[in-house]
Amino acid sequence: MRTADRLVAETVRRGGIWLGVLAVTSVVGAFAELALPLVLGRTVDSLVAAEPASRAWLGVCAAIVVTAVLCDTLGAWGAGAGSAQVSGWLRRRILRHVLGVGPAMTRRFPEGDLVTRTGMNAEEAGRAPEAIITGAALIIPTAGGIVALTLIDFRLTLTLVAGLVLIALTLRAFFHTTTSIAGGYQEAQGDIAARLVDALAGARTIAAAGTAARERSRVLAALPRLRTHAMDMWRANARAGVQAGAVVPLLEVAVLGVGGLRLASGDLTVGELYSAARYVVLGAGLGAALGHINRLARARAAAGRVVELIAEKPRAYGGRPLPDGPGTLELRGVGADGLGGPGGVDLVVPGGCAVAVVGRSGAGKSLLAALAGRLLDPSRGTVRLDGVPLPDLSAEALRQAVGYAFERPVLVGDTVTDAIGLGLDDPDPETVRAAARAACADAFVRRLPLGYDTPLARAPMSGGERQRIGLARAFAHGRRLLVLDDATSSLDTVTERQVGRALAGELRGRTRLIVAHRVATAAAADRVIWLDGGRIRAYDRHHVLWDDPAYRAVFRADAS
Image (cartoon, rainbow, N blue to C red; front, side, top):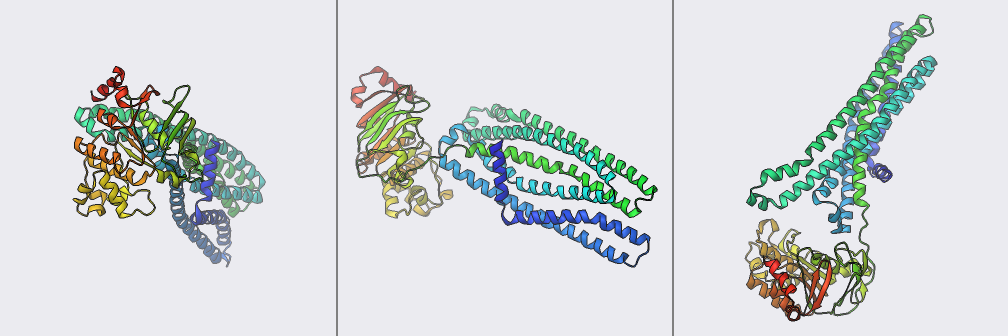
């Protein structure tokens, strides 16, 4: 938990001016509470003695009460604003890091769990500064109570300190127990969120299969675990509350007993005894830190889950530009989980060639496609484009050189133009339209209410139309290398043939790596990479491979 503790400490520094307001008001309010018993005691003595200064003491009491109320009000405002600022900073940091790591992040953390960590856990971690500051402010009345009782009578101080030791031990045990329980509770929340996101992604399949009840049970499978952690947290809170709460009245009785004896012997005045009773309550107010400790424990557990995200190593980019070249792609000894085997993958795709990647489900086709354009980094080996290792390229050079299209493209941006030109520094309208024409998307885009300026929210599209926009986005980017990961699976035969003509015509100068499931796509390629069990079984022309019955069986398996 040390890294979580460091993150919690950093949140305190990120709170800005509002946490400063909270700190000032907490300290001033604590001193006001500390001063009030003394002033009340003096006021009581003044009233009993009928001194002329009694009205002045009453005025001082009123001023202290007003100060305490103002501090509470401003402190509540500062706590809310400061926590919101810290949570926002945490979320921005998480988002930058998650996007910087790329698809490798979702290979370890399910999407729903990522949302939970970025949302709920970041918010809880953002409350840590408020819990620390307000909890620390409780030390002031406690320390002040000890000092004040010492000035009144040191025997009273010894009684208070004995009780504070018991309270401190109780709070320490509660903090460690609650941190552990809160971590399990948050983990169960993330599990439920991950299952829910999966269910929403497959909502149509679930509805068609009539398995809603079974899916509901699957999503809520972690609910008993969540309830167990919630009950454990409630029991820990109740147990610590009872233990700490029992000490306070015992302390009051003990101090009043000792003080009563001192009053009877004439060593204390009535006002001093009243002040002593009030200072015992303030000193034992450390027990009121239970709520702050609870929030800090939850924040610490949440920070631990956030740290797990930001501990993932983001992709590092070099500063090299891409030299002139045809787009030759080389893989030397490349291996990854599920691809390469002991010796790794050795492969050269000549610049300007169209190469199909085929294989049965799970053979590693999408993984090879992800490695080719550095959506993922290999665990060993090197991927080069025109002789330059991909990690050595700058982010801008890589983005301009490689274009990706996927089976289920996610369209990002406000308008259709934004979706096609996503990532381009200043998308030229003609570049966007040319890419759309090559992807056979221009005709249906022009029929939209505002054409290319139509907001995506007002542009309902079929699966095939979304794929065409995804292809257009890839065509607008990939100046050297186009990676199409089953990106034509939803296209009708005529449209797929038209896109194929564009790939073989106006886009012929670019290297094309095409994950294929159809015989026609493999036949149209210059060469075919045949993957089997994560290894390259063959790399040759389609008509040469077609003589192998096992190769023909790959397409029969995909068609079935």
